[in-house]
Picture (cartoon, rainbow, N blue to C red):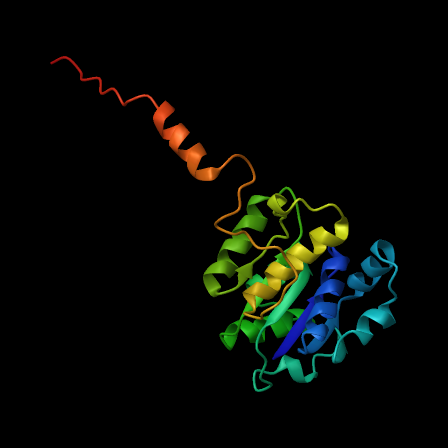
Length: 213
């Protein structure tokens, strides 16, 4: 599988780095784009160097290289992940403003009807952010805020990161074993069937009050 991975300047560089590591371990061909501010965020938030992050990918490009192969729809890929995705990049993709390789590759991914996953990082969200997300979701993109499932009881940032990255990889249809998945027989509390029966028995009957004519 051939995938484009882009990192922007939004907080969450560790998510993009872990995604690259995992896709490499799974034998995927990756084409990496780093924005100017992604390079700065990597230095601020992680112990990795930009060179080390680039080395995780099969191919790496400057965000200014609009002549790169991935800027053309004739270069076939299986999808693209922007992780993390800043609100600036989100808005540029929404209006088709392809002024750098990240937004151009995303534009190509949408027009070729390939999977585009945007790991959006912002909180709280303004009406403008929500409108941009809504528009892109209708255009076919997957809007993927990096939320955490607490039923797995994560005990470290690494576990939280792995969960988010694992769920992103799920969207690509790639098999992996990064996360503990919810099972139908999971019982975080008392026996589920017994608890359900007790709840049913304790529910008062519904009383219908009729209006007087």
